[in-house]
Length: 127
Image (cartoon, rainbow, N blue to C red; front, side, top):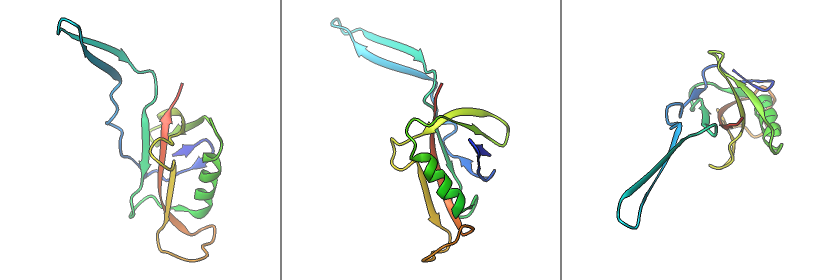
């Protein structure tokens, strides 16, 4: 799996893949009490949360550092390529907190570049 030019583990899970509803709906009442419904297809804005949990899809500290550097660029549009070759144009999703979360697998005061981290990456489709 790649995000722009950063290689991510193939066993990161897209945990919210089927939470997407491609149709937006609003409901309102008219002055006569009748129900007014409007629906429209969404073009983009699909949330992609990649999560390996604590037991899988660990990445090295250098990958985390590179992801954090990418996440600090405003409006950075990237290409996410999944293991099944589906591709999405994405930006980092900052609406639910940090777009990149990383935790040391085994806590260590001064980890090197190859030290392992669990990872969560939050993205949003664009275009």
